[in-house]
Image (tube, rainbow, N blue to C red):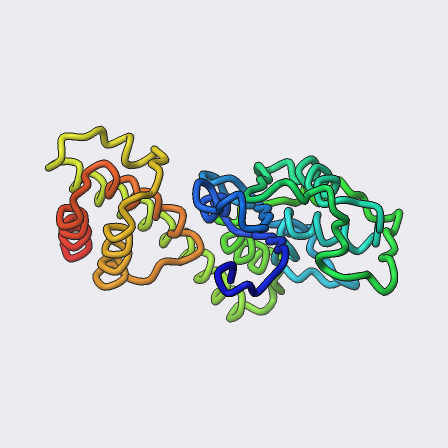
Length: 267
């Protein structure tokens, strides 16, 4: 986009777990792009208005209604404060998003510009109802990796106890989610142990470290191998991709990593 001169200045808001990894040491500071993210490169982002604070018009939707970072910056935008700068908004959202570290990257020189000049004028400012306690956003926040589990639990808990067939179906979904999470945790631990066994490295470094991603061909090969022999990655199991990244960066050996994945998943 920069090479093709497709923008003058660009502001990017990114909501995702480990979203800082998309820009950290990657986004140049001289191409007129300012980016802000829900989290740093090593942590999860958070859902908000999660059960039991997930009611709309009196009905509990049994899921998280938004993401803490996104809700904070969009609610701020809806106030139509025409004097607020990008930096003003960043500092406000950073303070309100207390569950993760809101970050900024790229060219910070134009963060003094008016924020609304990048998303357009708001036709009518939103009304902030006094009956809505702002602290609910944080109090109801759930780690994004746990939103699925929270949803299934709330669906089961709030189901009609007289409808035994549906209640059993919801119970099975909840149990299956718990079992998958446990399987996923154990699987990546086994993969790390298998690969590190032949590479004389610290297993804890592979499991819990945060190596800077450099060996991208190895990363791609590891993900491809995992999907081929272990199955698709889910919102929960994606948290363990950093294990594959660590293995690639520690061993610098693509074949060792992909063989380890294959041996564990085909055992």
